Amino acid sequence: MSKICFGSSPTAPLSLAVRAADHVYISGQVPTDANSNIVSDDISKQAHQVFKNCQAALALANASFDDVVKVNVILKDVNDFAAMNKVYIQYFPNNPPARTTIGAALARKGLLIEIDMIAYAPKTH
Image (tube, rainbow, N blue to C red):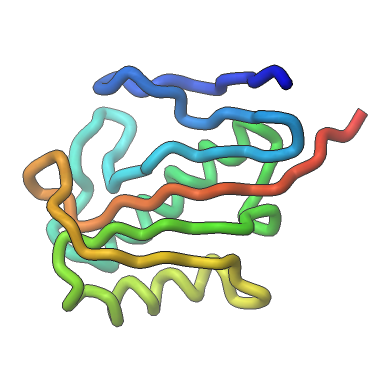
């Protein structure tokens, strides 16, 4: 099986998305803009930015939120779960994917959330 890597991070040695056969793996996305600045100190605004970044990474591999089968959410503070969930449901209103949500320290000061995804998106010829 071969893999195809899409995009790269300006701040870390990783690909934004990797296609391996019919699966697309999205690296952990954080709430930063095109200049790597954290967008806000509000969990809802950060969550929206993370989903925007995930959507862009999925698009690199010709996939979308409709193809996502697994999501991992990391929250700096588990007390932000309800606010994150209100944003989450806007992106997955029907037939949501499997999900794990955990609380953990994040790698950069100011980050409140990080999300990675797995999508099943068979290649079309």
